[in-house]
Image 1 (cartoon, rainbow, N blue to C red):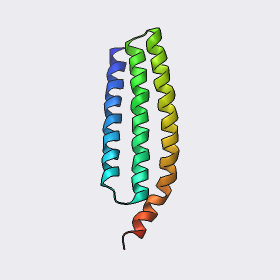
Image 2 (cartoon, rainbow, N blue to C red):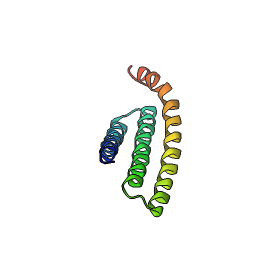
Image 3 (spheres, rainbow, N blue to C red):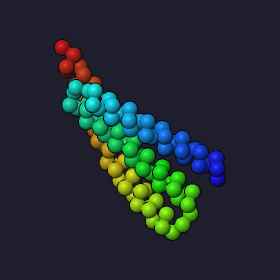
Image 4 (cartoon, rainbow, N blue to C red):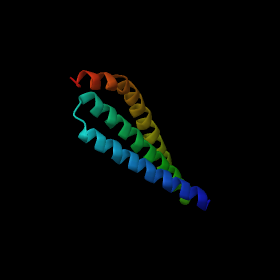
Length: 104
């Protein structure tokens, strides 16, 4: 169980780093569609962080209250992750076109 905990911690850190990376890209971008795309990708990374945190807490502290809190984390994480994934997929179609139009 210790190895599984280490894997979850590494994935949690990677999800947080991805969130920070995409938020930084969002703030540095000057194009509106690219900003929305990076915001959506950051939302997916944050949702992954929430889901992984819920799973890790359920693994570390097997108690009824922890399972309830982990279930809430999983529901919120999967819900927001799915919504941000749909948005990122939608905005991703227009990012190249926006870059091409604003190159001139």
